[in-house]
Image (cartoon, rainbow over all chains, first blue to last red; front, side):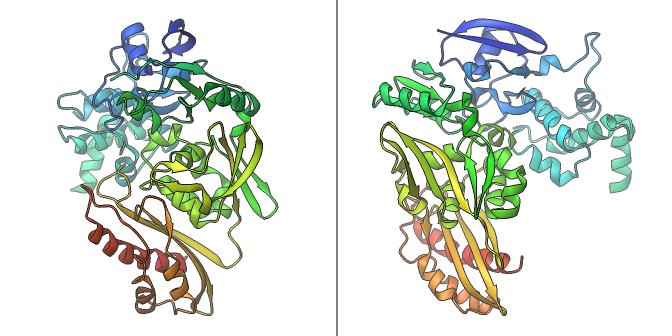
Length: 172
Length: 285
């Protein structure tokens, strides 16, 4: 067993784990953070994306011991304490950027990572930026819209809902 | 899918790492960013007794200038490589190719040295190292040595690293005055491996190619140099016709695989087409 100390969604956890424990299994099974899901288990789909040290990673392809001493943010750590959704979550809600919802936690975390680097990505930049995340409902249109709307909302250029309709107006 | 049990060691210096790798014996694996190794462990295609994690060794990370070369620590991540001003300036081929590796998540953890040590012939970075005549710095129980990229890749997933040795740094000569480069990647969908890709580094002189270095990805069990093309390009006018003629030699001396992504004859065709594109793009930079 190996000791890990990780800050997850703002709370410090110290545990003894088997070295082979994947970060996603540590989050789900030890900490109960089941908001982070396992999709493909082969590092293709991105459903298990979390932020490790502020950068997106696929938590099925990281050992929990590799995260020792780091800060992890999961989908469960995004909303405010009073339940107010994170702007990316709100934009996904407003733009109906989900169908079955299974890819959503990973999509939202990947979006947070992308928008932190590029607050106003073009459609092409969004599509390339989320290439590591698969939506098997193929609901990409609204996911792309939501990410662009969230970017505008977070950079203060528009509210997410007006931003969506603005995009549609421009396209029309 | 969970990896088989292993002992986990996380050294904090190169010296400690060499000692750990040496004492762990044959059934040890070295963990860099883990973006190839962890899937392999999960699928139980490999079950080492000991895993030596290089993630805690600060001296293996970073990029520095050293006279006519840049030196990249083996644990420098793909993400760091794509952003580093020294690499953008002096090895733009590496920055361009690295941006096509995996996806953002993979590039945040995957490392340059890990990719070279894994030596997948469908990987982009072994080809870049070969094309840029990189020198690979290695530490082992018998001290340090330098291996030229052309001597490093021996076979499918097989390198010249001896048991107990780890790759510590990669030295890449600065791109010379008048040289330009391009990496032409061909794959089916985002985040997929190269079906075939071509790295081209050229020096123009008076509207013609004076010298070139052409590397091929996934045209054999190791990355390859298209030496017949390099020869045919000398003096070739930078026109689609002349470059296309020289590029028709791209499949010579290769041994392309046949798999779900394409048969060998299709890859031979791709190599010629992509070489032409890569050389023209490089010459027009």
